Image 1: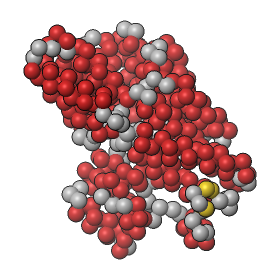
Image 2: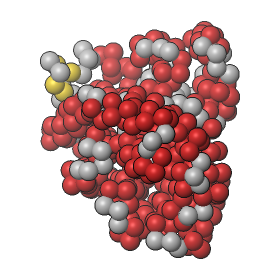
Image 3: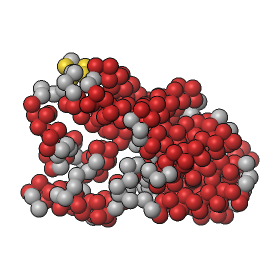
Image 4: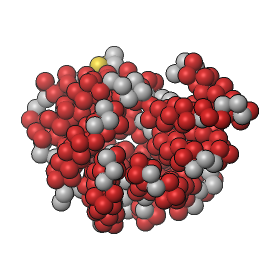
Amino acid sequence: MNARRTLLIRRRKAVGHSQESLAAALQVAVSTVARWERGESDPRPWQRPKLEVELRLSTAELDELVPDASPSERGMRARSDGGLIDGQPRHDGMVTVAQLRRRVYDLDGRYDHMPSLSLLTDAAQALGQIDVLAERSRSSSRRELQRIEATAAILLGQLVWDASQRRDHQTARRYFEQAERAAREFNDPVAEGHALLRNSYLALYGEHDPVKGLRLTEHTAAVATGASDVITGLAQLHSAEAHAMVGETRLCEVALAAAETSFGHVADTDAAAHLFSPVQFDRLAGSCYLFLGDHHRAERFLGTAATATRAPTKSRAIVLGNLSLTYLHKRDLDAAVVTLHDAIDVVEANRGGGGLNLVSDAVRKLRSWQSEPVVRDIYDRVLSLMTATP
């Protein structure tokens, strides 16, 4: 074990993480953290922003402990003078491609924790630089540029939709379709499946069209089968939710079982492993049973998802929003109010559009208790949230 990796272990312990707790925070296997610390492998680019947060390190400090590129890329970087001139991309092949890749992965890593509006400009600039570079690139770097383009276009679609509180479907769809085209050009079913999956969210949660959403999720599963158990399982989970939206209990549960099987096969080598979290099954199963009106089962699944992680992410806000709705359906005002306060705490930090919409739905269901002091407190917090500058 080299000295740098020894320092990595010391840093992990200094911030209070065990290998197990760090793995859980990063949503990777404990064996993956162990391999990083033994120097047998390095964190992938999309894992590094989260690792910086958990270890409380700057990008430069993490680079000192765990270099972020292969020896060949580091050599190219050392021979360059930074890859960018006055903020614009240089046209010298893989040096600039490597820098753009890191920039996009860094932005992608921040998405679930930060207000989307704060990331939009940087993401749009990165995609614009990729487009400029692609026009002048050699064929040897074209495939990697298309890969980064797909990632950047998916991210930008997510940011636009989230910042618009899930209203601007048209612009988001344009970016997701750009990502699909780029993925097909370099024949990557995982990236294509991810873009298709994001498109299905527009139909399911933006346009509230479960029939169209189901068509997209089933197509996603067909594209990703054999290439990524993560994308396949996520598509099956959202197919289950589409069935739940129209009251098809049996088909919903068939899709849930299929997703559980797919997730049981997920390996660290899956190209979409960074999109997987063990919490996802409980989160979506809970949402399914909420749509189906089975509030006891919804509470069980959503409660498990809510306690599995305390990170203030946009997905956690959605879990808490759905859990508060579940409690309201069960006429449990006290539990609903406590959960709503937790959801508002998270939304205040990251301004997630999905969480904000669910908080608004829950507030509307509080009208029959509007004279209660605890409800007036919720109204005050939501009013402040709505009027605050994002």
